[in-house]
Image (cartoon, rainbow, N blue to C red; front, side):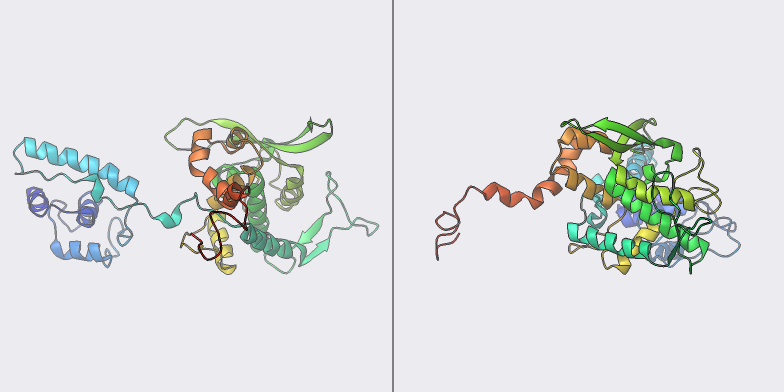
Amino acid sequence: GSTSIEEISRTKWKVDGYVGWRNTYWERWEENEDNTRLRSSHLRQLKRGTYRSSPDSVRPATNYSKKPARSTITQEIALFNLLMGFAAKRKMISGDARMEYSEAPPEDYRYQAVETFESSEIRKIRDFLAEEWTTDREPVLDEDGNQCFDEHGIPMWHRFMSRTPEYGRCRMNLRALVVLMLNLGARPQECLDLIWDDIEIQNGTTDTGDSIQYLSFRIREKKSRRKSKMMRTSYAPIHTLRVLSPLRAFNYPFNSPEDRVFCKLDGSRYGLLSRRFKQLLKRLDLYEDRNGVRRTLTHLRSYYAKDKLKTHPLHLVSANMGNSPATLFQYYARLASDDDAYSLLGHLKTNNSLVMTGSTAI
């Protein structure tokens, strides 16, 4: 309405005010409210995050206390500027009411995926999952009382015997996802979209002529929803099968080639593993690093990049991860070089060098 446009023009609202204005005018208001009229008392509550819609509201209020991401704000600033430009051109407002992109909130560095785990922290996660994996279990026996083995020669166990089926399935899927990401380097959503038909055992030959087995994965890429869907093939060591094979048996009857690798009791996609991984990190006191970065499943992918770039060519690691070499170099090569930075000083003499000469250290 004209009242809100005049107020925007007069006060030159910043991001906080714009968020309140957007939530007030671009979303459904309550049935008994006039959509074209701005109520200052409600706006103040929206800004404080204390406003709650009434039970009979057509659409309940969202979490107004949480600011949108910078990418959301910048897109809406562009639309806002177009609206204000149109209003100024039609003489509906006086002056320039457009907003600067510099007013958008910066990205929260604590969620940056280029940060990663330390090797000791990965060992801590693996040790915890391994201990959980080897306790509270009983062997699967045949008619003669001997332990059974699956088609790959892996011993079969009944696991999480004292737990509910839901708990056991959650832990089985979570462990398999963590191990898979550390050995495959795929994105979390790419792993969760896998079906058993996407996984194959391959035979190859090393440079020395030795035969080798490995796993190939047909990955449905999840770079961006705006881009066309693409497929790639990624590879993981054969020992990853020691985790995936028990998971497939545990997920029975949803373990046919067209079923999902990670699934719930009804065979549907297991979409809560990110939350379960967060709970695991908090339990191990690993959720935040010393800089306040909050870890997610994506940081396992960062660790994979950091680890592989130490010993493998950049173009091979980028092909397996589904990144361009430029992106991998820009965002992940630093992680690999940080641990080996002092190797650049290996040629220096420690006793008589310019870096350290008695009391004249610089």
